[in-house]
Image 1 (cartoon, helix red, strand yellow):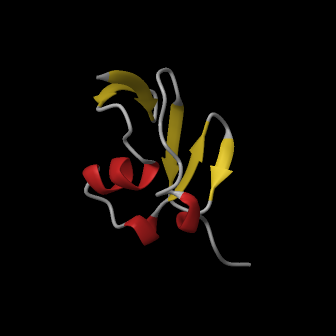
Image 2 (cartoon, rainbow, N blue to C red; image 1 turned 120 degrees about the vertical axis):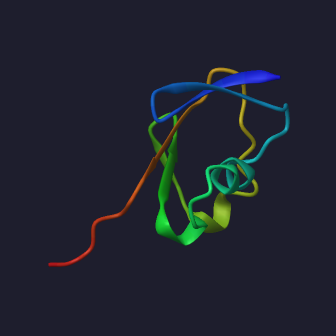
Length: 67
């Protein structure tokens, strides 16, 4: 297992876990959240290719729309 931070909380995940898998494990709809890893935005289409590593800091948030 590796340790990452998800929204400020330490979390253990299996090596090779993708950002898409992590988002799915939170129970939130993938389309309902935006994501960043180590402060860098990761588009929804890129989440499967984004493999998490020891110490990564993942942030999920609801995008704000409107104008």
